[in-house]
Length: 376
Image (tube, rainbow, N blue to C red; front, side, top):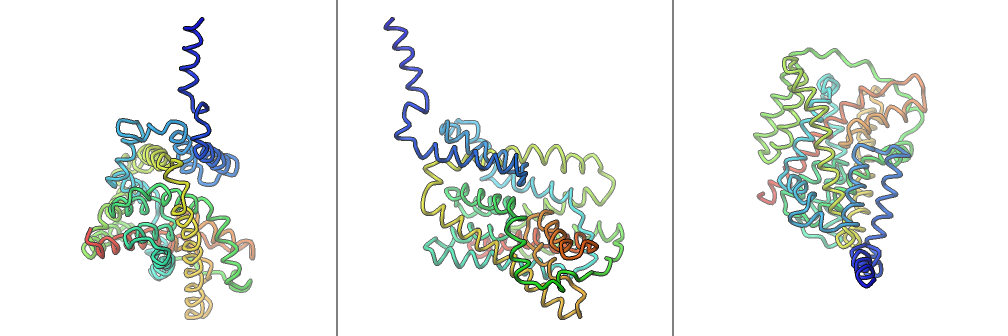
């Protein structure tokens, strides 16, 4: 009988519930993970990213040693620190993305650049809140709503302790684009501006589409070599797509490889959000800064769109400026949705894709600029 009692006692002592008094913060994080899973599954807020992130959060707060040296997710996370997974994500994005709208309307680069204002606003805000310069730089990329680049820069700047909160904030705001952006877009534009119909984009030749990733790689990577892992992989993936001679590589990069990398990256990022690392004042500041920065980036894009609207005599719908953040293609879809609410016959999606893909490049350039400043 004593053996049975001792065995049951040992089993009970191994459970999380035995130490609930000491681990109440872990249960708070388990509840947060369940909320994220609800948003991903029920509301379909970027489920491909939010499901693995939320489940990684769940796992690490039930079994913390899964992220310690020797634990499964520890090795997944090493791929984040070494910038392997973010770079592979960019390759997949490039293989799935049509740069034609950006090539057809190069002025879209200006809208993509304007939306990066949120990054530098976040940097100044983080410095004002007491973060170090490198910490502020790592946090600032949240303003571009770019999860992979946020992880990439945090790793390069040695800010792995903040990588979890930064990545979760970045991916959360990416998934909440349809909620955050429309009120800002409507506040800064008139109904008349939202109803502007833009001229159809010119056809883009196959040669232009092939030359674009090669030229961008040469120009950007020569000016900012530190951006090569991101910009280079983005353009390589796009070259796979546009060359038309490596269909198998295009399909692998945009499907099987992309989904495998999302699983590894999502669960490992979620697993950095242990209660000890996540439930503190620094995390609250990061989440708040991310929201403010994302709002600033959206507003800057719309306002620059209004300037372009005036400069072109009303030929540019300011709504497409909001797509200058890096959330591809969600931000472009939101521009289309808000425009269609004012005029159901208005079709802005392809026009918004130009600033949207420009935003991806712009965020990578911003990250490279910070690395060059800090001599990484």
